Image 1 (cartoon, rainbow, N blue to C red):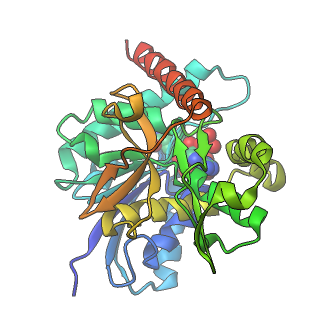
Image 2 (cartoon, rainbow, N blue to C red):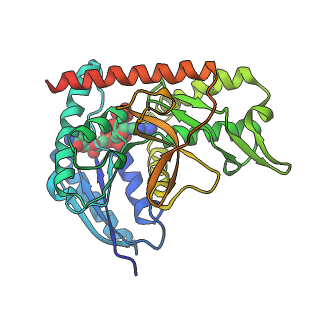
Image 3 (tube, rainbow, N blue to C red):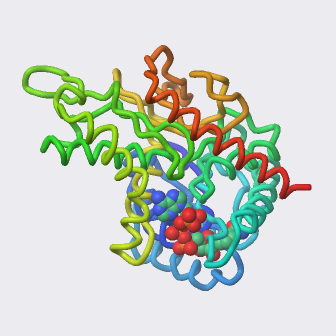
Length: 331
Ligand code: NDP
């Protein structure tokens, strides 16, 4: 039998956490043959609710669960973890300035970086979900210098999956037949969902999305804004932000990272930029990546037209500004 993997979820008493932990317990993240020990962290005001989640995990009698740690102590939560999914963060409340939210999250991610650096298992893989996800991940990277930069990522897979979903609805095809969309940049409304290299598996072979949709105005307009603003549309409909889709895509992100992407398929991940596609190095930016042997690689050599170039640069600019704002909160 396989050794259990320790998976940390921060903000585990929150609504994404509540959707995520049963998925992990069912093997959606790491496979149905992989036992797990769940580490759940939340803040003291949420301790009682967190304990309730722990009780439900016991009650569900998940066969893959080999242990549950539920705690408000970051050191206890981080000790020995192989995978860390960072969902906890300070939400933007009415009347708060961007800088106030940033400052709260910078201090949370700085503290959690140290706890992970000192106590996580070697080669721990980190996924940041909490917003501003890219910049929180960057702060985590800066304050955990002994964790390799390649191990620190942020979630843009939800945006990627939303783009696949929109194409599938538009063409009335199965979502599993659509692939290779790209989310470039920030997990914010400045992100660029790009279909220029996306394809659909049809009875007549693989066809470019652009050829099948035949509606460039839609692809260059409404499609992009729908994906960018999907989060707000969910809040409007549900009166709560997206949770099941966020949790599901966090599982997709980790699963593909650990177990690999299928041949000929790439996915979007927020990763530390090495300057590929002329994106400034030193930002956490969403790129198309393939994964093998537990490591991601940015897909190289894709053509970028003028329309796309502007959009790649715009979202990079926003990330540079966020980075500067985050640093100004540190001093
Ligand atoms: P959610 O579980 O709904 O969301 C958690 C975080 O994920 C938020 O930052 C949210 O950003 C972000 N997020 C990223 N992508 C998405 C997406 N597509 N849809 C929805 N959210 C997304 O929040 P809750 O308030 O229910 O839970 C948060 C938990 O974190 C609570 O249990 C709280 O106690 C804990 N917490 C921990 C802190 C810490 O570790 N020090 C500090 C504060 C809270 P956005 O805000 O933009 O929706």
